[in-house]
Length: 173
Image (cartoon, rainbow, N blue to C red):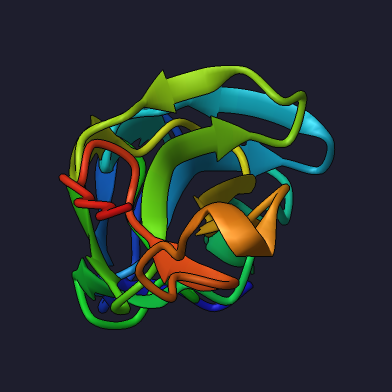
C-alpha cells in the first residue's frame, strides 16, 4: 500500500557512514515500519543505518484500516466523523451518529460478534489496528388493539400503529 512518501537520498555515501531515511504518512494511512525484505527494522518514521558494502533495499510500508457500518432494521441512517470510513488512521478518533426515523427505536451500536458497544445515539472510539464492522440497530414496535365484545363498547383506533420504545400512548375505551 502506498500510503506516504519517503525522503530522497542524494549524493554518495561511504561504507559505514550513517544515513537516515524518513517516511511521511498520508491522511488515512498507518505507517507499519521500515523493512529489509521480510524483516522489520523499526516502526519509527525515521530509520538511521550504517551504509552497507552491498546493494540493500529498505522499504517503507503503510497500511490502511476501514470501518464498515451496517444498518439493521432500516430505522434510520448514520453519519460519521471522519466522513469517509474507507481509510482511517489507527489511533485516530472515530465518531458515529445514529438518526432515527419516526416510529423506530434505536437499540444501539453492536460489534460483529453481537456485543453491545453503546446504546447511545452517538458512539466514539479510537480506531484499532484492524478493519472493523459496527452494526447500528433499530426496531419498531407496534400496538394492536382489539375489542372482545363489540356490543360492550368501542376503543380508540390504534391498530398496528408504530411507536417508539418509551413513547406515551393513550387508549380510550
